[in-house]
Image (cartoon, rainbow, N blue to C red; front, side, top):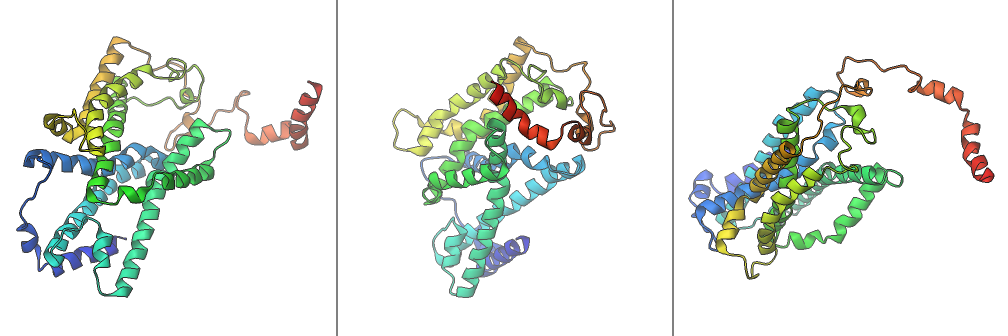
Length: 348
């Protein structure tokens, strides 16, 4: 795929006779938005496309062999690759105006204008491969992990991915990509009111409240433990998320229907940086709520699951409460384990 992106970029610049014609294209801002707010809107759009990976990255880095690999993926690979993809999209859209006299935001639409049928086929094949890889990594796997956490008795990784594929068709994505306006409205619509506040709560909890302290893995899976909060719900996080989400809802309504009444131009301009605003509102609200209603962030109890963390120096405890797996199998024969539920149900 990197070679494919370089080929598309080379074709766009060469067919446009260099960067000169591309840089001389005048600005054309519609919808009554000023240049500054249009720039902010573009920044929010770029953040929205990356925010899904930024929020869901733990679902992928959990499979990393060591912390260094996870750091490289988040700090170097993801920002660099996404920036290059954005730059390629901008160059392709600008080159379509120079070459064909009209702006085409969708690269596949530009490819359809080519005369070479073989080139169309291979480009379409590579785009399909890229879409499958992106959706599996960025959407399917995180969705499957979430459904497994919510319904562990019924869902596994494969079932969660199948469910994600079914729901993917149910939302009619072809309507989202029908035009550039609908596509950008979708990116800003779900990201600014929802993902921005989620990121704000996560960052505030880790850096401000817990001061970058290590998580107690054993407590994560312990009912009524350190992370149980109130009946298993962190009410402060829910309240802070609401604080960051509610101010963005009128902007979301305007993005869905620009003809809606009651949303002023000034408010639409205010929500042009909705993702960052939601992050800041939720982050500060969560920090203030935690200061007003404090809760324990550390425990003196030893992390009994620390041995499971990659790179940890601890060894797996060999206590009577956590016997090794081979001893469990020896202590409970397979036939007895199968017949035990049957006998207990028969006795009842």
